Amino acid sequence: MKQKDKILSLIGLAVRARRCVSGEMMTENMVKSGRAHLVIAAADASDNTKKKFRDMCEFYRVPIYIYGDKNTLGHAMGKEFRASLAILDEGFADGILKEINNREDIA
Image (cartoon, one colour):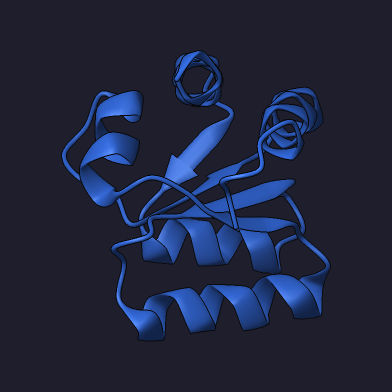
């Protein structure tokens, strides 16, 4: 459980550093502009949303992970529920990826 908290706290830090955006439009804009280093989509986002981001991230070569649920992601950001977010800082993205890669239960 501790690692999950670490991922969420890194998202929280990225938000406070203004290196994270959320919501479909902002996430999409950051991926397409080349500023996103990592995209995280909620597991309970619609299949359509997840497919859209998977395809977009594959095309723009941005890593994407399906993680947590909308409430958890929103809470980590200090906002209402969020289905998607983009990390705009390479350091934060690397830190989150490292945590994700240390876990077996994340797709």
